[in-house]
Image 1 (cartoon, one colour):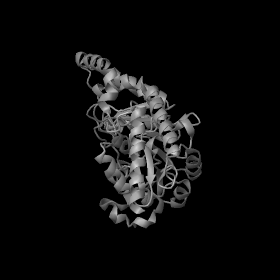
Image 2 (tube, rainbow, N blue to C red):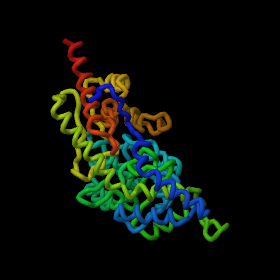
Image 3 (tube, one colour):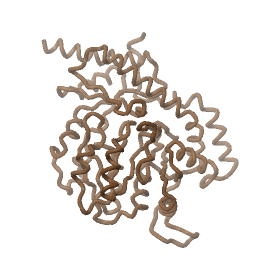
Length: 383
């Protein structure tokens, strides 16, 4: 095994290479058809995503960010309405709320899963609360049984941020099949990544599906008659054609990520680093689809480890170094860093390692060996 071999965090070309001819054929068909918008490729992908999510409907849009925005528009979010969401997530989860005049209410996470803590969610509900956005972070569902129990009792709208988690499930019930709608991202680094931006909203509510389509097309129906002020957010046929090829391989991709995660767990368990790092937990077993394999690095050594891995040509990333409640654009909400202690702690400890499906066993061994080497060097220096 060549221990000097570079290991990238993600290798999109490696994943796409086996499907290259099918991509070209699918794209050529779109070019020849002239149906660049609203074509059969989009309809097919909507149906496939709905099937994957155990939902009746899929509504394509321009991005995962727009999927959240459109969902909030369709459920009638108004100025001053509060929407509860985690702070430990990507910006789009909360920015969509603010763009519509709503108020993001940030709550803390479960430290073992990095997902929204149901008890914190419950404590944050007020008479102004309109909706909750649970995020299925890193490929693992939030605790949707408990979340839905809380929200159903309070009559709250639930919009699942499943940007990283198509295929994730709890005892067979998929992400996106719990709340009023689920939002999926096709950004190239996602488990089902396109060749550009794209998004999808899945829902079981026929009236909600109709409003989503209305708002995503300028609020126009019929043509040039505008019922509401919508936006222009469409999934184009080129992206849909590519994704229709890739979705037929999604089962294999999920299996590859799960295989790699299991090997990491095995090798790290043998490495004897229990005092130095904490491994990620799959709370719902095989329902975790591992968009990220995120460890926690203790004793303030996360940044040192990342720099060491970079020096060894091993990819890693910090998701997320600055929680949303600490972002400058949300300063007016009045949060202090310590208001969400588990979120703050996670932001200082997390480090995501390569986990893409095509990753080879030898590459995973190299990553683990280099992590071991880092701590061995640190221990010698401290002696």
